[in-house]
Image (cartoon, rainbow, N blue to C red):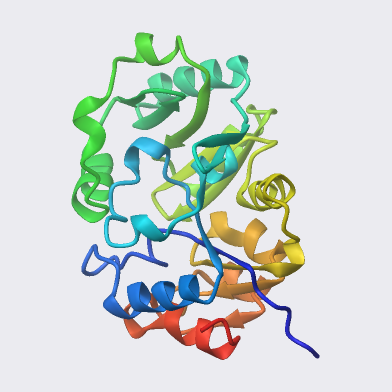
Length: 264
């Protein structure tokens, strides 16, 4: 079967571009993206991180053409907004009520600010220590964030809690990429829908795209891109829908896949 000519690459951040071990982008990945760019291929980010928390891409920032953020809730390119999908207000209210009742931590992301509601040990261990996120000192109080449209909510709950909670959030989708928390967005927002919005607006075909990821929130975009690549460190569910499973982020996974498909 003839391989498609790839014109646009989409990359998840954590566990795909950035190593969980070093918290950095491997040199082989940076070099591969530079080669792809030289070949005329556009480079896009596709992340669960909201814009204020995208703080780890300094080495490749100059190569990036656009962003799918908050799992597709907010997409933009070339300083132009492409789509923005807020969570229904009643679902936001339900999430805050449940967090209060069950005493779990939840990150709420608005269009301008973010809030860490009831920060606990899990939040600090994962977001501060593991993910090295630096922007939380800029967070606002719950009353302030609720004045904004909410794009994403990240509750620190178990899969069992998630199953029960999502039955109450009728206007939302959940995309879990970590065992201890999940990302909740509008049901009109996931990375796959973000891919289609970007393709329509930027005038390229989805059949000319290649997407990389490692978590459950990457399933929609990996399944819909012309070539979906799961990193070697991916969750099993993602590997099942991928066209190709490359090596891990720490074993030149991005470079190896781009070479295999002739992008570089």
